[in-house]
Amino acid sequence: MDYIKIKGYKSIKDIHLDIGAINVLIGANGSGKSNFISFFEFLNALQDRRLQEYIALRGGTEKMLHKGSENTEIIQFETSFGNGINGYKATLKLGDENFIFANEYLIYRGNEGRDISSFGTEARIKSTDNYRAKYVINHLNSFRKYHFHDTSKNSPFSQMSNIVNDQYYLYEEGSNLSAFLYFIHENHKVVYNRIVQTIQSIAPYFSDFFFQPNKEGFIRLQWRSKYSSTVYGASDLSDGTIRFIALTVLFMQPELPSSIIIDEPELGLHPFAISKLAGMIKSIAAKNVQVIVATQSADLVNHFLPEDIVTVDLKDGESHFNRLDDDNLKEWLDVYSVGDLWQRNILTGGQPNR
Image (cartoon, rainbow, N blue to C red; front, side, top):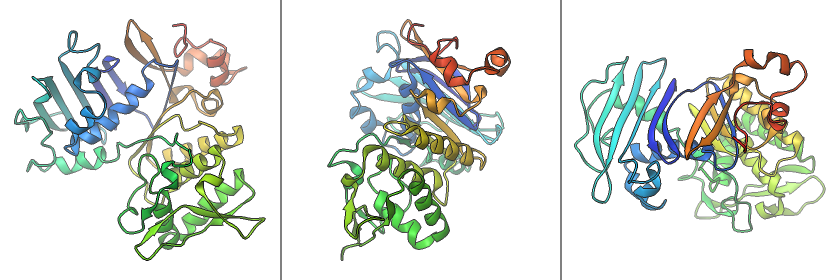
């Protein structure tokens, strides 16, 4: 992804943000970080023709529009992939009950071509015969917003998943973690061993996962300790450990997506685990995977360069996004890390009092 333009979405009135290899969003609670992250989820639902369902389950059209329908009637976006070779843009206008696609364009080398919309309530990118669509769809398919927050007794990690139907990619909340790990164990042994070793680096008591699909092909996440022959479940792991396991699988999976988008991955992690997480982010970024992260952790921010950081500030109900400039921070960075500057309110953005 080269850039993204968004107008009229939630707290985002109008932005144009260039997307780098690593994009770490920092800012106060309610500044708009999660709104930006959620827009990629919005795009994924849109291209999959699930937009109306997505909007209905999240409070309706009023909550999608910047400051509501009294102030905003349209949502517009534009994004480009592969150094401007392919792109996608659309305008969604509020109708009587739902959004209507006022226009929808597949862009090729800056040329938007013909409008493929039919003034319907769902996108036509999957039904058009335009040859450019398949290239754009491949990118939009990777726009999954991951969040591994729920670690309760009945969390997604504790659910049964099918070793056939649930093996293709990791689901957003990790509900198929067991089946996805089983697939890696059976088909990518070297990658699997690296995943286990990485988990052991922050949980030395962890021995290995225990895979035992039932007759119907369903499996539950189970594991063994180095100090016992007992088979344990996901609920027997600490909150931080189960989240770190999910993060490790996400960032070390054998076939990486073109982008990984995640909200507050540092939640519940020990500082050493945060350091490992930062290392995994840098590793996949070096493999041409774009990473977009929203965080509240100065420890995580400390591991990245200023140009990796995007500050988010809410002013008069509008989110403002600014990428840090290394030149403006050179003198400070001789003494402090980026996270330290953020904590000390030396950064000009991303602060709760701005």
